[in-house]
Length: 632
Image (tube, rainbow, N blue to C red; front, side, top):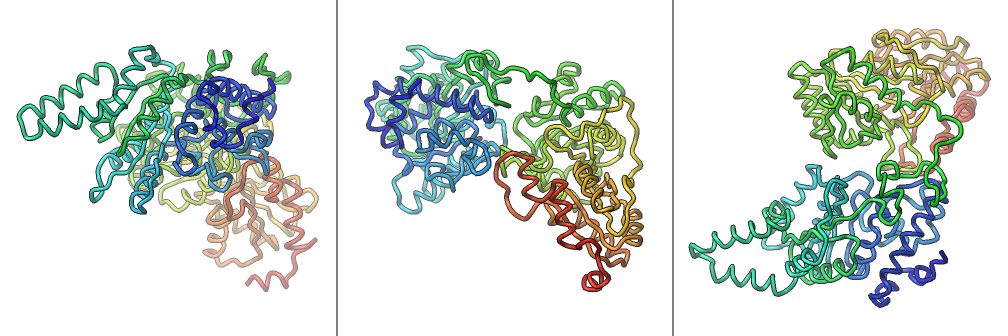
């Protein structure tokens, strides 16, 4: 396809100059372009973006962007938006180092009004923008586009509850669009549905509705009429709950039908106050392979031919840490009937598909509700069950109060399987698990294990599950060193590390998978290497022993340096009255951009060569007594 019409659209203003009759052709070209771009890059979300093509075209056609604000939630359905807002050619650099982000970013385009990566933030942000416009006396509309999955989060309903009421007599002009692509919902399309949506969003309906209210107000018929209207609308649309929040509900309508979308959006743009539009779309729309298997085609994990679709690699991939967790979870569930598995809407990502199939009554997907998932687990633990919360490191940030208040203070035996620890690569800063060591280490009763490889991960999970208290086991995305996983499970010595290499002068204390590059660097340096295994409780005896027998200590971790495992070592040395040079290697105090994870780690100096160079730069070939004295 030569994309003749799409190439003429370099901004939404170009789009708005097109005749409405051209929009169907533009949508077809846009969908093909997104599919072709993701296939060539081999990296990025696919199904969700194919499903928002017509909605994106309609929004930019009707609203005066960027003056009118569009806030996307989660943000992984914004490729059509990016293409239409001057970033068409940048799709070739999608999610690559120095290239275009896979999510909205305010520093990337004025059309990206709010940065996102985590879900369920759009309504809160849009409400804030709408109220700011009112307070500043600016005439602008704000639109939040939120998926049905993101609507499961409490934050979305907190925002609805707040946006639907006046603040000092002011109501924000905010439109919430629920992009409903749940495959279990039959799209309510057709002539009657279109008619009802257009009627309910039109001026006549609004005028008649408000007129009736004024006439009947303060009469016995008012409450009857209000209830009759709600129940009448409830017979054709599931909107009563949103009306109760103070929104005018419209829909559901076909999110792929421009002839229905555009007039409805035009009507809603002319209305003031909180509005709610329910659109039904299909993940992977227009690409038969993605429509047939939206889970598989959620995101690309390599380049592919759109005519053929995703194909399995010729050589089997290494076992990932996520797979290790999934297998351990099933094996542990066989042994202990108290085990329950909990995930906040990440069944596939967290490796829980087999567990769900084998133990359906013990599997709990709570939706995108991380806070609830943690307190839900706490409640189960109070009743003698053994909850395992499978959650990405970056998503645990959203449940920090629950981790402290509901689990740790009560010292409940909840195991947190923290996937995606450390840098995650193409997803960038919003998804990087850089901070979990720092923000969990300071919580009393918490234990933190950092397995170095696949087999140790299995044993660490068993160890954490066996512990009678809150425990986090953190592991990175993807595969590790390729160590064979033993079927037998053994409890690791609690709070104890192990020496993996004996050397002289310098002792490297490695936390997690960086053990292996540390061992490689140690060969050139003739350094001692300890696999610490535990951040908390830290093996203070091992730390003290290495401090007394070496001239310098180096800590290595794939988390932030500030407050991380290296800080724990410094605290232990200070408590023991031991003073010697300490070099902390880890992730710097900055948000690290998207790109290839291995290359990003190398840029941070956390590959074998980087570790070696950092040690040589700090200490030279041999740390001197002068350096030791200077540190004292």
